[in-house]
Amino acid sequence: MTIAFATSTAFRTFDEDLPLIQAAADQRGLDARILSWDDPDADWSTFDAVVIRSCWDYIERRDEFLAWASSVPRLHNSREVIEWNTDKVYLRQLEAAGIPIIETRWDIAAGDDIGSPGEWVVKPTVSAGSKDTARWHAAEDVYAHSAALTAAGRTSMTQPYISSVDDEGETAMLFIGGAFSHAIRKGQLLEPGEGVVQDRAGRETIDPRTPSDAQRDIAQAALAAVDGVL
Image 1: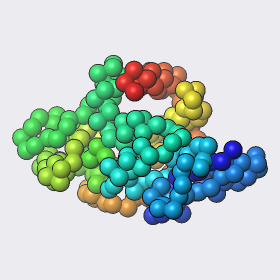
Image 2 (image 1 turned 180 degrees about the vertical axis):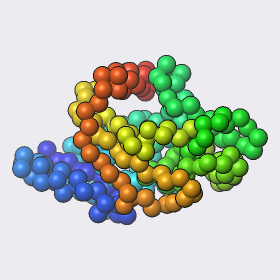
Image 3 (image 1 turned 180 degrees about the horizontal axis):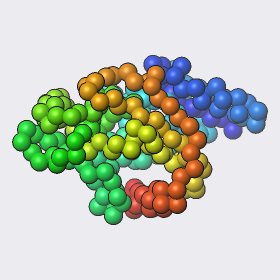
Image 4 (image 1 turned 90 degrees about the horizontal axis):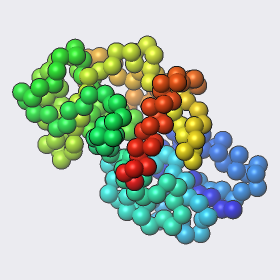
C-alpha cells in the first residue's frame, strides 16, 4: 500500500508527529512518503491514500487548497469535509442541530450588542494557531478588531472569553472512523491585553486528558450532527 502524508513546506518541520508516522509506516512495510500539498511534481494519483497532516498554510490560500483537495483521487477526508471544517461558520449548523456552542456573534459592527462577559475573543472564521485572534477587555477593541477583519473581506466571530481556559485549558477529542480514540488538553494561548499576536506556537502545551462523560456525549452528538449535513 502506498500512502502520502500531505504537509506544507512552511510547517513541515513544526509537525513533530511526521517522523513518528513515517517510522510507524515503515515498521508495517508500507510505502509512505511525506509531501507538500502544493508540490508541483507530486503525482497524487499514484497513492492508494493521501492523508492530510499539517497543511496549515491553507488559511491564506484556502481556495487553492480546496481546489487541490478536489483534484486528489483518494483523499482522506473528502474535499466536502475539509471545506466544511476549515471555516468555523460550521458552528451555525451545529447550533441549529442542538449542539451547545459558546455564544457567538458574527461580523459585529460598532454599537452592536456583544453582551458584558468582561472579556471577549475576536477571530476570523478561517484561521489556525490563533492567527489574527485576540482577547479583549474593552468593547471598543472588540469592535475595531471585528471591523478590520470584515474590511479585509473575512468573516469575524466574537465570543465571550471562557475563563476556565486559563487553568483547565481546552479538551479536544479525537475520533477515527466514528469511534473515540483519545483526548488531549490544550493549554491557554491568549494572554489578556496583548492584542493580536501572530506567533504563539512556542506557548502551546498539549497533554493527554481523560474526558468526562458529558464531554464524550457532546462530542458524539456533534459527530452525529455532522453526518446530517455532509
